[in-house]
Length: 251
Image (cartoon, rainbow, N blue to C red; front, side):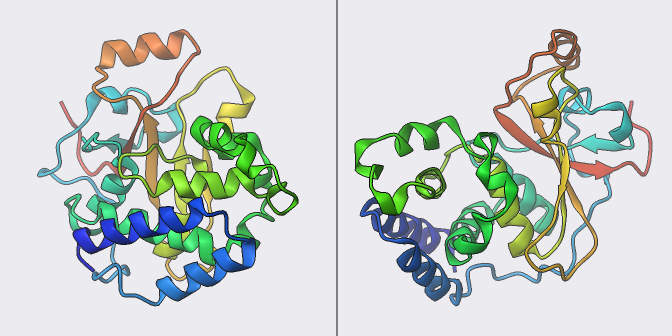
């Protein structure tokens, strides 16, 4: 599937979710469309080592906690699709698969919604974006069927929009479509809740054991600004970057 077809299916999926289907209808929709060949590339190989042709994001690298200093961050396109841009670069060294990855995550979270909503993380507020909670509080969601799934459905509907921020929940969908773990890294801040964002996220079914690593970052930040933010113990991310294992030192 090309990116234009993926965009169209995202639009159709958002329209479908806006009509507030029940959980079973959401699952059937996701399972039906997951049969479509969305990602045309072999997902078995992922390059996790830094190479000389990758531009280093020094500001983001300065945000890495000490235990992750064996990584270096790559410059990632910051167009709102940065999480998917980062994963696309792991796959093909370009961000050309971002739209297809976004669509694949949306359909994954729909097709197996009954499994994901049982995970502890999806019972917590921090799994969702502020926009999802804002939408879920709309009176149209105030019905018995949506009492426990409103934020979940609102989040997926929000994710259908190109450029929409991806919450922690998106990592779970990504891990499953890649069939491999994802190491999520959050900068060191004085918050036990936010430190919990640093975790290894397991896929629904694991086929590959080579893990990819993503840092919650801030777009356009330099090393000085990064150190200042960390010293303030306050950090509000608006960007994601891919992290590669160092194979040589950078100046």
